[in-house]
Length: 328
Figure 1 (tube, rainbow, N blue to C red):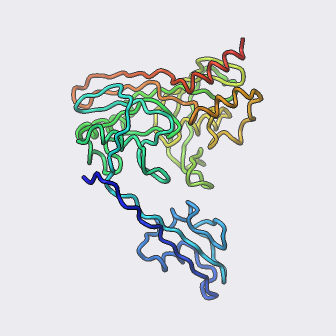
Figure 2: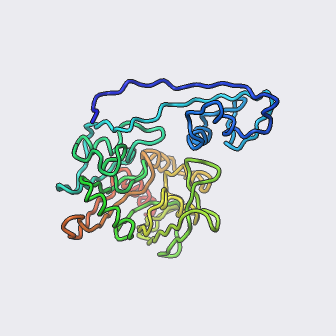
Figure 3: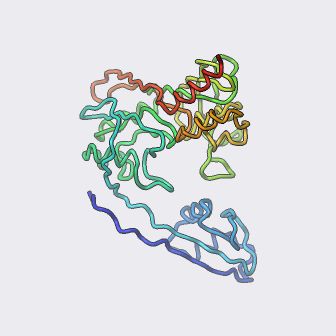
């Protein structure tokens, strides 16, 4: 496994003009003819990421080109297949020769992806346990499930291929217990409920998820229970029956109660708090007011049920304390 730093590869640039005979051609088809080494899938991803501009503006891959339009494309190098370990301190909650359970801080990405190549949980775990290399994939060693960058809390990693297979099978059977605590905008009624709405990629944004139209997306089920009602906010316990990307954030926003600090799904849905001190404490969350507080699973080798817990971190407690002081 390669451990040394890699030389940064240059971003490839392309510029071209549309001929009159090419009028009406789809942008992705047009680019495929000029960048034959790139797949249509990669070209579409570049377009959706804003790395392809037509006359200086972002368009869709299906954009029909017009004569004399100028197309500019930036093609960054693909990430290396091997992950470089990074000696980053981890808050380890449980560990043996088979599994590693970490309390991930908000602000840390689970594994390398678009816009985040370094400082990931996967790289830190690989430095801690080098034998994880190749378990589950070269870019996601040991990663069984993920937490959003802005979400803190418990996440389990597999240290062996056998543990990985057993844990992913438990996730597929929905037998892994995942409990979250979240502070949301507004007063949630009733005291408990189930949100059963399919989730898919937002048709207007590649980086967002959304409740999908009927017949689209994948089934997603979130159970919630009110723990405490506060001025302008509610503390909820949420349990996942499925594990879709951004599931809790999308589901709660869909019922009008986005999570505090969630600009992606809540900015347009709620008014900015009037209390400047509350605004500041929310800004200091370094993510969203969502914490994976409980994790339960059968040990992949012994079969013993493991039930692990993590208290609310200070970043969320500060907001909660401020809200409680306003209710007195």
